[in-house]
Image (tube, rainbow, N blue to C red; front, top):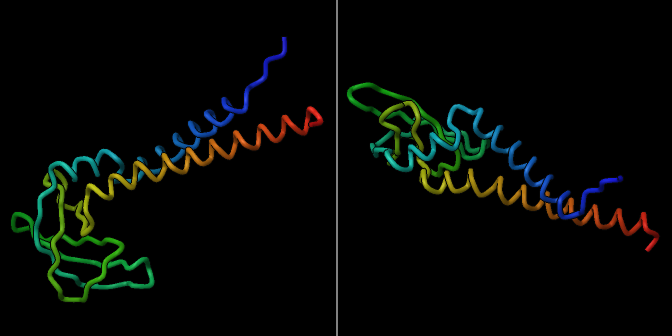
Amino acid sequence: MEMTITPSATGLLVAGVSFTFFAIVINIQPHGWLKWYELSHSGQGVQATITQLQPENHQTCFFRYTVDAHEYEGSDQGCHSEIGRAVAITYLPADPTFATIASPNKQLAFLLLAPALLSGLAGVFSTWRAKAHLRRASGK
């Protein structure tokens, strides 16, 4: 008995494998989905001072901030500020070294939705390719 996989099942399999790959890559980083979720729900705001800019590196800026009399340094991309300017950041009280200028909610949404969208596109493309292969194989 020959068992074949349908084009739709191929697409679902590819989408699942792609999403699993993205989930692993994102979550082996020091600040994966769970940390961003924590930051979005229990983050605290504080003022920071921009200390350095690297506009050629995705608009990266470095900043310095103080939490409970301890000074920390952080960096973030997408910063459009000037050296010496005060900016609002959000830090994680359980880990004050984790801080961002960006909206933690938007960053979390991006980290969840981008892999889902890319995985969905990979699944659709795989389904289309599998259907095209079946058409060629059947001579239609």
